[in-house]
Length: 100
Image (cartoon, rainbow, N blue to C red; front, side):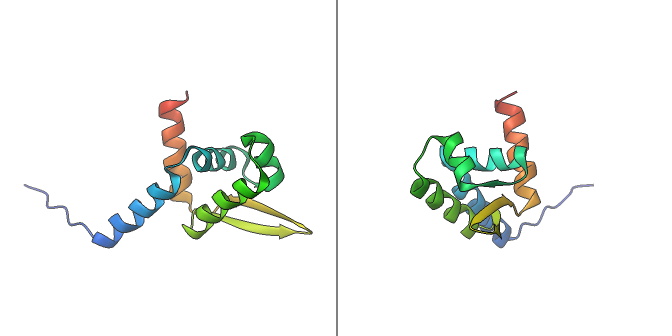
């Protein structure tokens, strides 16, 4: 019996948008860090990435607009975490393949 796979073009558009957002070394590092730590603020990421806060914030904004991460305000700080669990699994698979 032959299987017929139907594809939804919207699914490919969504995946392409996620991959575009991840396709930058700094953003991939941010998501990797959030996968490992669970939650982090801009200052922690700034130290890890050795980038100016404005640069880190730009990358966070791109990831947030792609629906990959979400922010939680605590006082004057915003703590970011992975919003889309599919992205967490995807990034962890990439990390396991390339960094282990």
